[in-house]
Image (cartoon, rainbow, N blue to C red; front, side, top):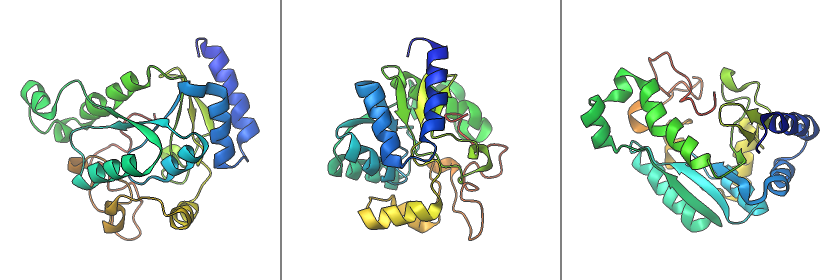
Length: 230
């Protein structure tokens, strides 16, 4: 998408037309509109979006941000997903390794300045990984957090200057659980161990019964998003 106004207009029209469409219909629209300039991202909390997308677009490029701080279970899920589903997994890495970041910026940057750490290890690497594409699929849902209640099924991402497609934006947690059970979707085992929202290991804790599902992310810090979806 070369012209911002064209992208914004396309996204606005699609958001209105596809608001009540199924996730599969939304993905099909994106595939027909953008072809091989469409990709998706996955945090490997589960493979629901990968299952959905790969049924419509076999061989779709799936970007995984390899931050260097992931739980072993997340890496294991990533490897299992790559082996099971018909996708092309792309591992996006930060420009510095964890050791190099510690050397240059001091150890445990995630505890001292999580915004900078997230930028270096997530936001900037994703920006580079998305450069070949015009649109990307995400698994964002409106019921996940207050910051996501306005999520459209299709949006124009002004910062990235590309179309962002959120096929399950209208889904509830019950919808997610039902699909996972019916389709036998691969799930990160941490989901069954008190981690409903999974990020980097140093910045993610277990969530108690009744707590907000994302309350375990950056607990005790004035932070609710890594910056990718803001």
